[in-house]
Image 1 (cartoon, rainbow, N blue to C red):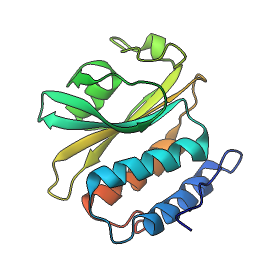
Image 2: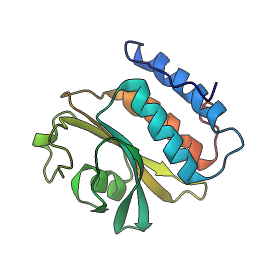
Image 3: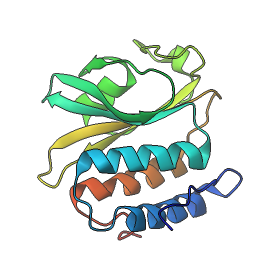
Image 4: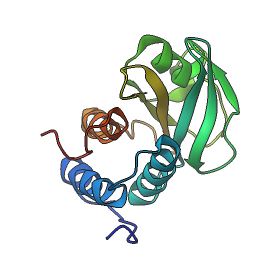
Length: 168
């Protein structure tokens, strides 16, 4: 099953995220390497939903600096300060940030001019510290909603040591 890349476009989001969580659980069974997890999850998410950019920014200096990690898409920004842009805001505040229109977000960092909306989810490690943020960009406005927030927050629970499909 882990060799399969799901295409979940057209599937209702709650069902799509549940299928994806199950797939991640199987694909990462026995793996405890966060970089391998980031690479696998970004690839599966990117292809499942056809996003513009899907990837992780890792915390390299706590409360100060994020650096690009595994991702799918065009060249990403290499470093982002905490509190700057959507990623830095999510990291600094420790909460998911959903942006319907990136042009309306104060201080948005444009890495790809085609980006129209964005969601950024904090990724917590097993010690409860911020490990990274998951950043997803879409070329469509208002592409992300509460179903995405819930589904992605559950998906990144893998990094805290909880199997990705263990919470209902």
